[in-house]
Image (cartoon, rainbow, N blue to C red; front, side, top):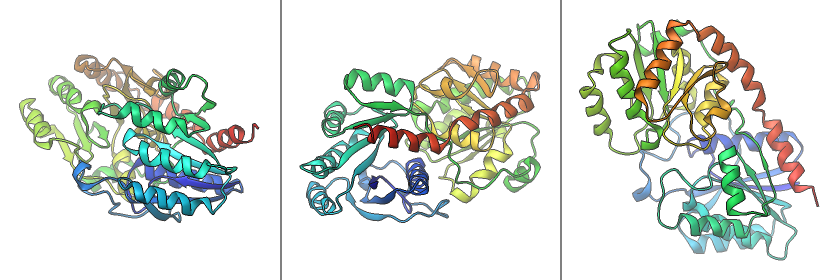
Length: 375
């Protein structure tokens, strides 16, 4: 098939850019003619909560892309939609994770499909976002008016899709494993690189936003510091008030056992942090699916996660990690203590290595092909 793949790609950074690069690679591997249509502007600077939208390091997985789409310029959507019609694509695939992109995505789908053979497939990472904003429902509804097929990446997204579009033609496929990082290195080597000498290290990784529950983990650490010697390694860029979290760490009395690296971690350094940790902690208050869990599985890292969204679908309690209720620092602290007191690292690491086999890109590509060749 001739496929146009809409979404962020290098030099834009983040999980969505990683997803696009991996999807492109595996579609091409299956013999499809694929072109990535990248953004010239993904977010206006005033609306972007981070420090920069561009990758500061290596691409991880270099893929070609054409930067065309300005997310906030309707004239740009119209012009490029007309231009891209000339490519006579069989399929346009868009990734959807924020209703902010609904107007641009819906317009491009509409123009490419109008009186053409082109079909549109939308991959739903989220349907309705964690942090609601005015226009979410209208913008999402607009995209669904011009989408032929869907891939839902979790059970919770599938349920939302069935309510939102009762007659949707879709498949549910879990987010595949993010396999574009360097391989794990010995734990001692990784800790030496980070200047960590502690015997026990837990990792919180990724963008720091309210729904991800870092404040709950800080409260759990306040409990844990009285029970065991333990280091919390926090790696990620703050999308919000960094000072609020720093005050919370001080008030909890855990500055001495907390390392905070408040920057986006370049692709070529991600392996160091996962290699240094015994376990990854995801204290999320809400979720659909999580790229962090799939990154952890790439490194066969066990996970302690909350029972929200698709996390308990991915993290198998007692096999590849431990599941606790959300917004409960006491339960989170108990799970960390259980992990160490019952010596679960080896068992759960083996379970994570086994679970990672489920999350293949071949399954995602097969879903794309099956959906679009039904007719």
